[in-house]
Image 1 (tube, helix red, strand yellow):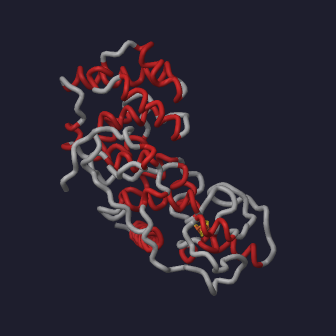
Image 2 (cartoon, protein in one colour; image 1 turned 90 degrees about the vertical axis):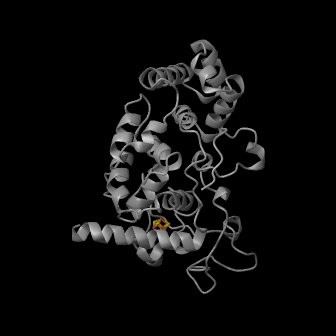
Image 3 (cartoon, protein in one colour; image 1 turned 60 degrees about the horizontal axis):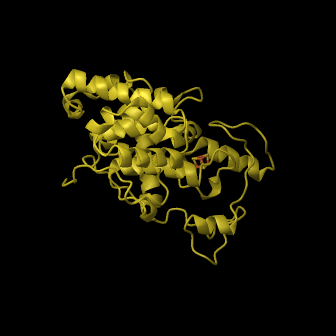
Length: 315
Ligand code: SF4
């Protein structure tokens, strides 16, 4: 291992540790979700919102409760069922094509044969399906098979660019493949989920809350933004997207992040800042529903009934 590779591994370890202190360590169950259902879900997730993807999946599941009934569906019926998710014709074709190919090649609809494959081969197989890229393949491999794959979505890409862990020109696939071997075994899921949570709650595309970020001490972009704020600078386009104006979090925002009432976190004073205090909120509060679903984390109350049926996890 080169010095640069060792340094990247060490930085990822530090980032993961700091995130776990703030958000807790999400539990990942790798055996819960049925992989072929997650393949269908990933196809439905293209170019739509999480909410519409979930609606489309729930309608599809109600109309075609088993994979064989889904595979035997008429394309027009499947299109009707998933229309709420958009691109219904293309997605119906992709789903039916994928199921037909799996059955033809494997004599059934199970993707369990992927368990015995090396990770690169399994990823290559999944990405050979139209509409399945490295991100969605890695989500399946991580959450359905427990492989050490590292999914990078737009949140993870933005945060890792700002942290300087990947070059500013990286795309989702390049970032995933460059980071994956440097993440500690067993940490791929928790780090992925915590980076997404950070990206949604703190390291937002615009106006990231650097002063309250658990990664500020290890983040060159955050330090640059804080310095610019201290000297009154603003407006420069920053690494990972967004502008460099530094907006202080309002008390309401801090409360929405779970900080206690009656304490001041605004401005530059960190006297009252909760930096470093261990926080143990459930990951289901903010992590994306798909990944949580795939990881077997129970759905929120309003989602119940929509959860894909899978094998119970006994691990
Ligand atoms: Fe993002 Fe700022 Fe945190 Fe860096 S310090 S990860 S730029 S919120």
